Image 1 (cartoon, rainbow over the protein chains, first blue to last red):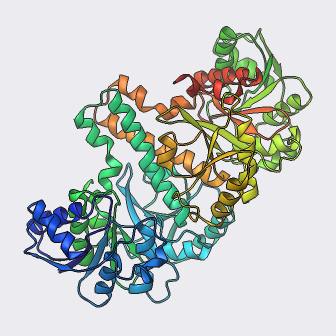
Image 2 (spheres, one colour; image 1 turned 180 degrees about the vertical axis):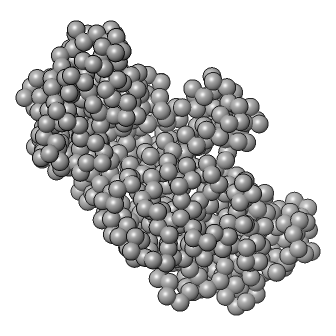
Image 3 (cartoon, rainbow over the protein chains, first blue to last red; image 1 turned 135 degrees about the horizontal axis):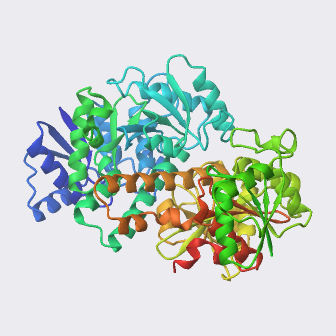
Length: 315
Length: 315
């Protein structure tokens, strides 16, 4: 099994990625291809005493950042670590590609370089979040920003394949109320399509509180609302934890308070592509990168996304 | 100064409302008109030993619930406590109307019965939320679900009048990234309009984390995303607090952890109407109702919404 990883993706790259890879090599049985400026990679590794012996380094001249328009991955950044990594994946050099870099560039690059599954119009990002009963899968958490109702229906259908351990995952639609008339035109039309699709187990509109209460296994949203939802969860819980730490929260409880962080110790899977692409959190440190690699291994082994999420072990 | 209040609005009404009014009468100098089924009000007050001496009770036969289509406030529920209260407000019987009932019905009822300010096309709900530096005003948090870019611009313009203590409130647009191209077509068009409006101090796109970090005074959003944002904050922080309580959080810290609850101890103001209407939280208890009444008094006195919010006292 071979993992291709973007050495220059994320806020703390390349140190976080190289250290994370070293941790993963110690713990898992796998091969790693590290993609990025070879001179910089070797220099960073030497400075941090990270052995590159068990890693293959593939050179890439540039890095595509969050400030670059994502489509530049095919033009000025065609030689970026992300673009080269995706091309390696397409060419069969590895089983899965991981990057903690720009989400937008990764989605655009994956669609343009790796390609979509037949029949899939738009990719989605699938992210696991904790709930009172176990966890739920948010889909889309930011790949396709402008969605139609049909897009949301396709997300729902794709999501069922990510949860082989569930016979009929309960699929909910992120909304501001439970009634079918709630939401904008997008949600109202999506409700009709989802309710009329006999191949899925649609349980209706789900408000944020109901999702955390465990009322669904999959929470379908357009990429914009899904991303607002995800970022608001992170921001609100970080705010509460910050206030508590200011008031003297113990270290023991601080770990509990970071339930949302720990649940995302792995990564989010891009769904609807010809190959496997995993997005690690932009603020990933070495431990997070190791977690993402561990998750990637489980996904490749066909245990589904759930089995691989950090949160899957909570139950 | 006279406050009109919906005796049957909210999950714990009428007990919460009657007890809240009694607390407010003890603390503030004001008159209260309580609207709702008079027999039930007098029975509930007698059972709970709440004196109605200083309250005027105006009879209304029905209650409009969250399950009723909001437009029913003009037909089958034209005699509901909410509709009768709004009519009293329109007729000048009081200075402000407060309800913890259905948000949808309150918005529709306020527009149809009380009327909009000249030139205002859509009302907004203005809610204060805490931030690291102080607090920010979310607008719209759920009044106008289907918004155009022009609607968001009008929300921004209206918001400046709610903050007389700030010379040029920093207005941000809720979005998934800071770049002007981020978001759906709605956010991209709104960014252009806001950036081009010289009467406001637009500071650009604001992600959820930046809002809590104190990067804006006003966060403009369409009613759908604003409501998702608000409900996600409540749900995520409640989830974190729940996990912490399960792990042994002290009572002292539990109070801190409920920063978001306490910040909303008052209510949210409906903006863009001919008269003042305050929405109290649906789960309001007696203390929350008292807080909303206190906030209402400050709003009526022209101190702006900020001065009246529970959160205004945090600084």
